[in-house]
Image (tube, rainbow, N blue to C red):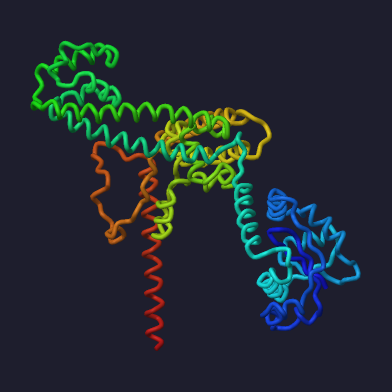
Length: 479
């Protein structure tokens, strides 16, 4: 029996001196000392790697589920077919060897214990590899394999998109905090300007140029503000209720506004970069939901490939995981219907009643677009525009159906109330509801007929009662 052992320097083939080594429970006892290890196994052949790149390719091929050509040629040359089996330390590699070379393989816990013993005494069993050289080769192989694993395609870089969208969100938070602080700070001197100038970048540029409010009437703000807003600012500066501040105060406020302007400019350039990256790696997704929403979906999933593997139901609530788990924990039926896709423009156009249905449709189209971007061979927008038109058409159809159903409900008559018998009914006949006729009017024919029929019934009832009474009297007399 032979044993295949992998080292950072190459492949080694050891011959077992006895089959009993891997058949007992004390396999590791045969390798407790270097002398016992030499008696247990002996080196048959060793195939070193030509360079570090060869070692990296060999390790990468095994990781990717392929047989290294160098290993295949080594086994064809050195393996003796008269030997029954080949012991290996990796089950995946053993399956590849058996499939491609038709060599019988053995892999179990005893073989793993034997490999551990060989590894512990590798410097004794394999004199070509010293302990120092083995550690250096192992370190170089690990670095090379890590670089090979982290290699990526320059055309589709979703990692750059993830970092960009996270940085964009952080910049928005920082800008909001800085602008809020600048407005509050400068509002002590000129409080009316906050209502007159709503744009943050315009406000920061205006403060940097104007400084104190007393300088406003003699300055030209046409490059920053529209003409009507400029006029209002100058009029408000003359009658402002703000307090006076020193030159040092206005210098610090202007420095803060300069930071706001620089951050705003960097945010614009970053957003343009994000748009270009999204149009390169996910054109169909970008055309369907926009670059920013698409980048947030990719960042939440971890990569475009992971997002493409998600079902539509997961894409729909992506970003609302906390609300979903909270509803599941509370056993509530009101689970979230939207996540990141809530900010998509087509979903914002739908009314509240059809919005959950539109969210399901949008999630399904997003899933199809991501799969086309991640696994499709064509470049550019192929199905994104078509999906967008289908969603708009379906939204109009649902709105018409909803309007029709609402109109029908409004036209429907109010259902009649069910008759309920009162508690006093049946207790007796009341004459209060009878119609009173005057004597001068003759009774109609149907009234006479009804009266006649009622009289016959009364006579018949009296006769029946009299007959019953007579029979009872006769019976009593006999008794």
